[in-house]
Image 1 (cartoon, rainbow, N blue to C red):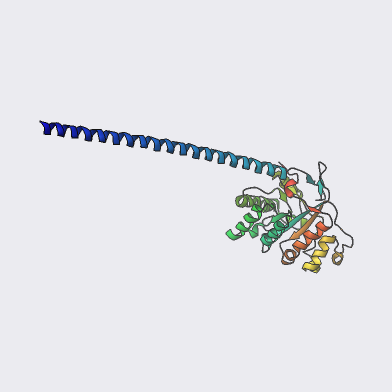
Image 2: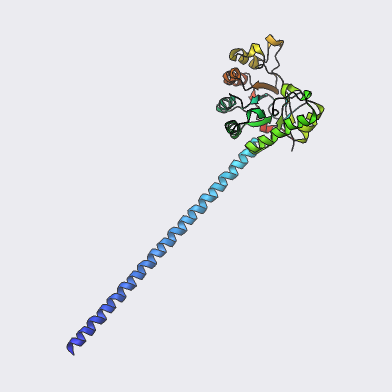
Length: 288
């Protein structure tokens, strides 16, 4: 009997010990769960705060973009840049035709380093390969406006209306495919427009422009040093321009050429030394 009583006591003791251990384990588990819940709550709070900060940053970026594209200028019938809303009149517009051939990306990098704006007018025959399209995309992503300069650089006065439409609209379609937006500016090759092209460009919601002066397509100025002097002074005596064409609002024509690329930085610096700012094309009034 004594042995049985002893065994029963030991059994009860073991059961009690197991019960205590289980209770402690459950208590610890509850504490761990509670800590994990607190941690998750803190992480969720941190994530929400980070998202709020990110949204706030995006809003600030949007506000900056809005400020950058505020309309301050328009293009007149002579292709000059005219200030509106009391904007600075001492500006010039840099434009680069026949892009992206061989030097457009390098020219864009030079302009970007100098914080100078420009319009790159592109031809469709320079967008045949994936590499060329990627080059155009990079130029656009750097913040430069992309303009339409026809598909094959055709003289619009020498082709019929259907071909003119193909030259203009098909290139706008291609540009949109590459950069995600249609061009807002149009320049005809050789500056040669027709009544039909003018009307079509307007329907396509593009601003038609020619230029005030440009020299890099004349043989005497296919030299970086001579071109630099001509673009900064506005004078081209070797092609009959004895007097300066540089004035507030001048629309400067350049091309994707080796000598223009070499002179680009000096041209920008020289114009700034004369008190001119390179106008942001996104601040020019377009057709909505």
